[in-house]
Length: 284
Picture 1 (spheres, rainbow, N blue to C red):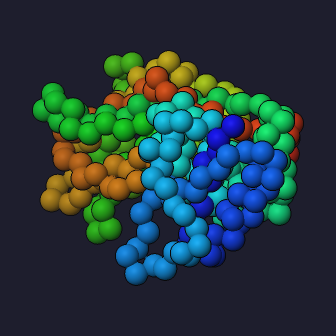
Picture 2: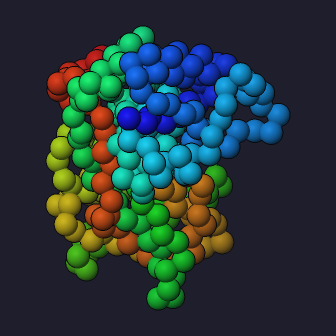
């Protein structure tokens, strides 16, 4: 068995947690390599004692990825792993860590991986495209969400949202969040959206600061196609961000098409904790 360890060097000082996990896994007979899920700043000093490999190259012949960090780090790492069919286990050294299976003080449980003592939990993803003048100018996949938001100095954005070609809601506001059940506990929850258990297969539409009392969150079936049509933004800016990634500038008339992706993320579970136990613990 070969396991990739991906630390967040900004949170895991000197990669101490990743190094400890490497020792635990290798003692249990597991082959390990350490890779970064993202590039660090040029002036950031990485420990020279850790041999860092290239993630996409190692994913081609690995059985699992163990990610250290918060949900943001896990989102970065899991997308690359998903494209290679590799399951992911999250170890939380961030704040919330809804997707993580272990906390940093529980990494001794990683030894159970060598005994195949775990199960896989599949999470639906979203396919996100930007259509401009009939052509696709951006495509990505989201485990959490696709977020349309105004620029820092923009006024409201006019948006018309369609489900399977039928108008569902039209409003002006600061933006809209379209998320998976996994993403329902992220930005969508903060914006007043519903919490949906991850095993459900739904798409959630959550308006952000809508300028009408009738614009409420909508939960659709996972089989729906959701189109967000960008109306008036004037000379101001509107942006799309997928899973918190780099913002893509939108134009008036653009359509963001969101539907269930052909990819699913596989999360590794070592325990039988209920989602509701995790929810109560994280939200206190």
